Image (cartoon, rainbow, N blue to C red; front, top):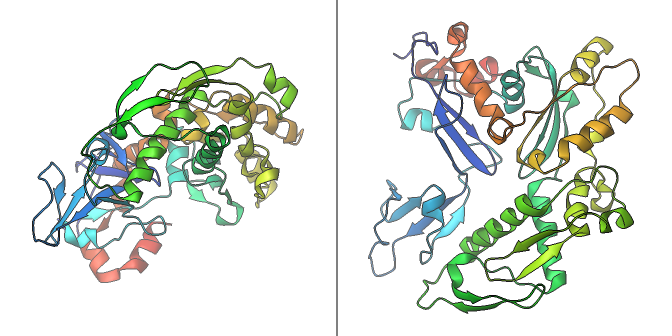
Length: 377
C-alpha cells in the first residue's frame, strides 16, 4: 500500500489524540474513542537476581527485562519498583513508530483545528484548558494563526497544586486507597482513623505521587466551582457548601475554598501569569477578528467545572467590542467537551476528500520530517 492514495472511506483509519493527561484512541467515523487511558505508563525492570516482575496483562517490552503497564487498571496495582513516567517528550512522541509498526500512511493535525472541526467550524477561537496548560488558539480556514496563540500554565495541574496546599493548611494527609486496610467513621473535621495494609510492596515515590494525584483530581471534579463573578470572600462565604470525604475517612464541608481555587483561571494576579481566557488579542485583520469572536469553541477537562462556561461568557461579553458578535460554543456533554479533538480527527479521517492528505510510508522514508512539515501545517 505504500506510495498509494488513502482515504477514510477506503481504509479503516485509526485516530489518536495524545494529550498530556490522557490518550484517546479509536476508529475514524465513530462518535467517540474506543479507549481513553492515562498518558503516563508504569515501567518495571528485572531485579538484580535476574528474576522477572510478577506476570500481569502489562505489555512486555522488546528490551529484555522491561515490562510496561498501560491503562488505568494496570497502573493502579501496587508493584515493587514500578516507576510512573510519560512516553512523551516535549509533548511529542517519536515518529520512529511509523517504521517500527510498519504503518502504511499517517497524518498529523493540530488539536485546535480538530476541535473547531468537531464543532462544525473551520474558523474560530479555540479555548482549551487541560492538564498542563490553558491556551487560546485562533484558527482560520482550518489553519492555526501561530502569531495569535496565547498560552498559560494555569490549568488542571495548577489547581491540583492549590488543592494540595489547602489540605496542608488543614493538616490533612492525602492517603491513597491502596494503603488503607480499614477506616472508622469520624465526625466532620476530625482527624481520620484508619489502619494501614500489611505486606505492601516497596512502591516508588513516582507511583505513590501518581496515586495521591488521583485522590486530588477526584476532589477537584467533585467539589470545585467557578464563581459567577470575580471572587469576593463575603459572597463566597454565603455559597452552599459541598461535603467531601477522603479515602481515609476524613470528611469536611467545603465552602469558600471551592470557589477560590478555580478563580486563578480567570484572575491569575496571585499566580504571576497571564490570563489566557480574557486577554486574548487577535493578531490578524479586522475581518478575521469577526470570525473568531463569532465562534469561540470551549474545550478541555477544566471547562467542565461547574459554572465555568457561564463565567467565561459573562467575562468575554464585557470585553468584546460593541461591533463584534460573541458566540460561545460549548457542548453540554462531557464526552464532546473532553474528546473534541479526537472527534474532529474522526470526522476528518473519514472524509473521502481527505485522501490526498495522507503521508505514505514511502513518502516519509524519502522526505523525512520535511515531508511532515510540508503536508501537516
